[in-house]
Image 1: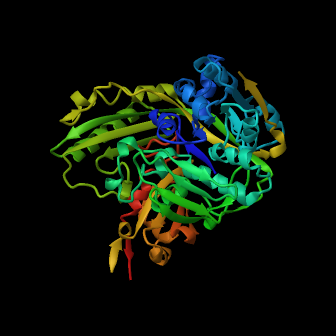
Image 2 (image 1 turned 90 degrees about the vertical axis):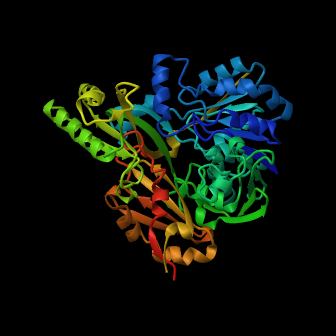
Image 3 (image 1 turned 60 degrees about the vertical axis):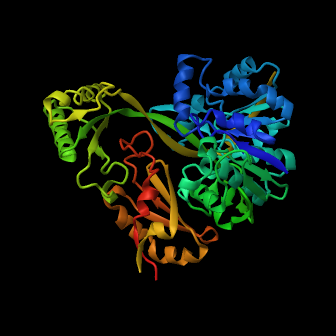
Length: 432
Length: 104
């Protein structure tokens, strides 16, 4: 049995989680998932500004913090922290943790091949800012064979981080579809960190133990593809089939066809058993052959946006906020500004659930939130100056303007496309 | 007997671009047939009204006592494009707990 933990569900997740996973009990592999769909574009921009950047900057200091214990306990780290510059990430890791051996998986970044791909009529969008192929678990497993303490990938799939050690340790073949599907589903369960140990869980949430010290998930994987989801006993949180089911359903599409570069997993074959306190055994998983294509994760420029807020107090809080919204819209029209969309929400009334919301009849306060987006940056910038004046020249009782006018933000949107698998060749480089 | 969905099920929701997904899970496996009968794609579409501009598709996971709904064009463009406070549909699952269902 090997223990694979996930200590980071996205870039920005709890900094203490990976440290506690190592301190509070035994693990063999520490997976860290840093990349959301649009993270790559942010990193691409950082790299354009400075060729030594373009990776998850939280990662090297974390490795520095835990390096001694990694070696003491023979824990291997697998992270997609490399972003669009895995080599620079490896060098930063070695600077923060001298003496470690770092393996890097390269070959996912195809930003430089966009013209070639356009000539081949792949389904691409305009204004591309970054382009990466999703890499599966086999290149990561190959990187583990180098004996590296830390494996760094760019745009690997989230699930590959957990599947790779199983392939590495158990020698699963590239056509062992059921086992690969099992490892993929193990990866799906733990890829969002504490979302499978009691975080963001509706079931009896008030009584989830010690959420302040919530334990991040650990998969105890067996050679036959079965596994148990658990957490360190000393940590807070709860691992139960109800909790695991919520995470299994998270961001799920067609449950019979969960497609990865490694296999197609069938979520309707999953069998869950509560086998002990904070222990859920998972078995029965079936898989199907991987597709002949790989998915590209592409980010592209899609205009500008800004969102600002004001707070209106009782009495007639909602009426005042509605009147203020109307005034802003009239002023934008008078200025002749054009937007692709102007969107208004009333926080405390309908922002989360829209027409379904149970709106209070006479709220004590309402936050007006107006957003605009469009291709004209000057128009969006002009909008940002239209909210604060309402404190003096609009309906009474407005406050909450302390941060001044809202920032204008570039919209970087996400696009995906399929390419033949043969287009991508990965390779491993070792640094020490 | 009528009740809110919250009585027999819990939910989790998330996003894939401008499509939201809402997972609905029966607390007790024996209530799964009630979910199957009461929580149809058309009822979910009707429940969310103008919040969901596209189609609603339902998938069944009898092994988990769960249903998975995909709500197309439900996030105002989705991800970074959306101007909504809940651009990723994190709270849509909670909203669906208010759906009125027939328990008998």
